[in-house]
Image (cartoon, rainbow, N blue to C red; front, side):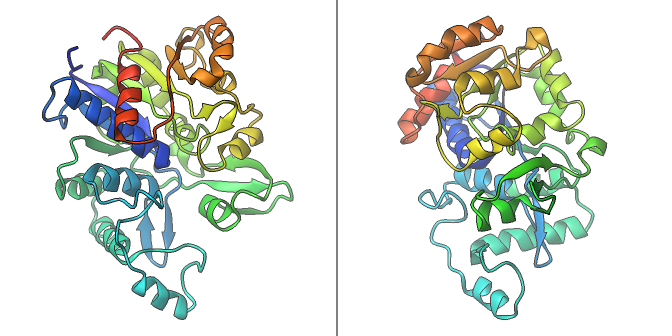
Length: 327
């Protein structure tokens, strides 16, 4: 096996973090000792927010920490071994959100980021500085330099930030729609379109299709870049056995009228031949009966084990994605 020279991954959330680690390991297993120049990760920034005066980028931080090996793997977010003294003090002042915990080490990241942003750096430049602290083995790019948060509108027409709906209410409030104010005026971050155009393969991580991959694809020009690239575009299903792997993605899918099935999510992304973004779609062995429907939609189905239980299984899944088409 030879290592492809250029791999781009669109990712967000815990599933995205695990998959990106797997891609890095798969590339190393193919003989690529330094994967930094080969692997570009376009990270969702659609669930970013301002809180207590600092800018939070949950997906950016989760993927950065995971690649750096300092993430809290049990919790799924934040830093390993973190403490919460500052967060407790913030809440004693009645500031912040009592149901949204910020660790002390994590707050250090947010403070550094906010300071750089206030000095005039763009999110792309900030992420470049953050990445320089550790040997990540990947280049990280935000999906856009514009501020694009996610707002959830409920059935009663009330609205709240996605993080409140997701973390405080655990998606128990029925959503009518998800909105990304400002996204129509945004543009892909510098380097994103070029990375996609020059890629040998583009991978869609098994992240939430609505609030992780969805905002990335909604940035004007992003889907078109995927349709125009000469690289194959391969996605990995976040649905196994008709169920979501983690979180409440099924609630999100229901809000946009998409069934919780591997075939339905593939159809949601669509075939590149018909104006969508996918060439191939990896599904679990539990969903092999859906292969024919996916193939009929113009997307090549590939049945593989999808569970990312550890580093080895994550790397195996990534290798399957890299091998799904000829590169």
